[in-house]
Image (cartoon, rainbow, N blue to C red; front, top):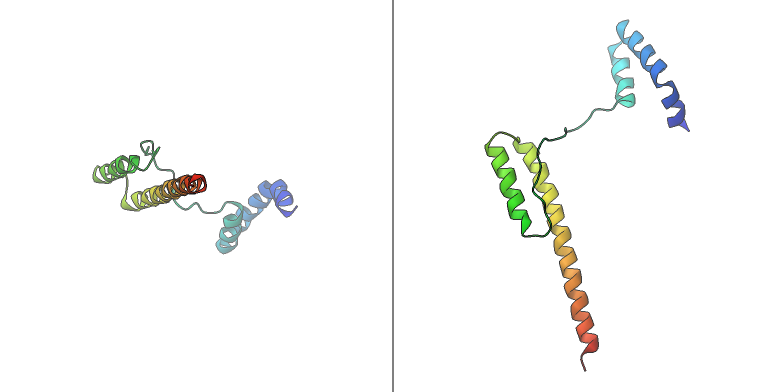
Amino acid sequence: MIEQLLAEKTQPLTEKLIEIGLDGDAKTIRYCLDRVSPRRYGRPVDFKLPPINDVRDVVAAMAAITTAVNDGNLIPAEADHLVHVIEVYTKAFETHDLAVRLENLESRAKKAP
């Protein structure tokens, strides 16, 4: 309910805050605008990873990231974030693979005499 009320008053509130800020209270306007329009951390990266459909594709994705850093198309921090995404994705593949293998072993064990 509070969010709805604030959403309806965002424009007049922002205008008032700008007025207060223009009167010299920069701290107040910064404080309030941080809540109305929070800072973005990071930015969209103009970089397309190759498709990762299984664990074998991770090598191509890592090579693409390395090449992009070497060419100056990605900064190391951006590459680090992408590598983290790939690591999580790889762990998901591994977990899925282990679950499938375990199910197969359990199924065979139940059928064995």
